[in-house]
Image (cartoon, rainbow over all chains, first blue to last red; front, side):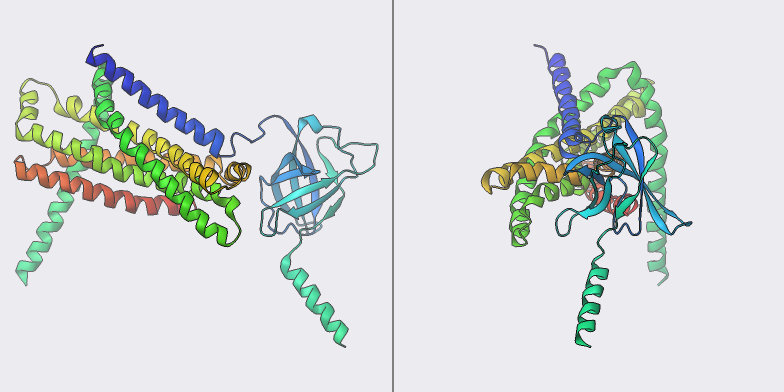
Length: 156
Length: 258
C-alpha cells in the first residue's frame, strides 16, 4: 500500500474516532441518550411554594418518569406559582384529573421533582387541564421554624 | 530613568506590532480556505501530522487522568458516603475542564511546537521566499492547511480525551473500587446536560484549537530566521499557547457556567 493511501486511512480513522467519542459523550455520558424527545401534552399545577424546583425537573408517577417540568411562573392574581408540565403523549387520557401533585426531594440533598399520585376520578387529564390538589415543597427553614415554635408553645 | 522608560516603551510597541502582525496573518489564512477546497490533499497531509500523530499522547493522558480522577474522587467521596456520585464527578470535570484544557496544553507541546519549528525552518532556509518567487502564496499554500488542520483536530482530540477519561474512571471506579455500575452511569447521565456541559466543552476546545494553532503558526512565520530564532520561537509557542489557554479557560468558564 502506498504512503498516500495510508495517510488517508489514518486521517479517516482519526475523524471516525473523534466523532465516535463525541457520540459517546452525547449518548452515554450526557442526558441526551435518556431524554424523552417525543410528543408531550401540557398540564398545569398551582403550588403555594415550589421550593427549589427547576425547569426540566422530572415528573413521576409511582417513581417512574412520565414527563418534565417545562415552565415555572408566578401568578400575581392568586399569589401562587404555576408549574407547567409536559407529560409524555402515551399517558394522554390515562391519568385521573383528581390526581395529587406534590413536590418531593430525591434523597436528603437531592434535586426536587414532582410526584403525581393518581386519584379515583373517571375523568382523565388532557392537554391544558389543571391539577387542583397540590402539596408544596418542604422548605427546611419553615420546618425548623415550626419545630422551634412548637417547642416554645410546650414550654409555656 | 529615561532609559528605563524608553525600554518599556519599545517593549510595548514591539508587543503591539507583533499582535498586529498576528491579526494581519489571520485574514490570508482564512482566504487560504479556498485553496484547500481546490486541493484537499494539503489539508489531509496536515491532519495526519497534526492530528493523527497526537492521538497516542492524548489517549494515554486521557486514560490516566480519568483513572487518577476515579481514585482520588473515590477516596474523598467515600468519606461522605457519596461514592455513587463518582461517575458524575469524573465526567463533569473531564467534559467541562480537563478535556479541553489538557488537550490544548498537550497539543501545544506536541503539535504546536512542531508546527513552529517546521515553519520557522522553512523561513530560515528561505523555502517560503522560494515559494513566493514561484508566485505561490506561502500563506495560502503552507500556513492555511496547517491552521485548519489544527482547528479541526483539537475538538476531536478533546472528545477522545474525555471519552477515554470517562472510561478510565469507570475502569478504576467500577472495576477496582466496586462502585455500583448503575449508579455510576446513571448519576453521570442525570448530572451532565448535553447542551450545558458537552456543547460548552466542545466550544471551549474549538476556541483553544484556534488560538493554539494560530499562535504556533504565527511564531514560526514571524521568527528570526536563524537557528537561535527558531528555538526561541518554539519556546514562545509553548509558553504563549499555555498561558492563552489557561487565561481563556477562565474567561470562557465565567461566561458559560455562571
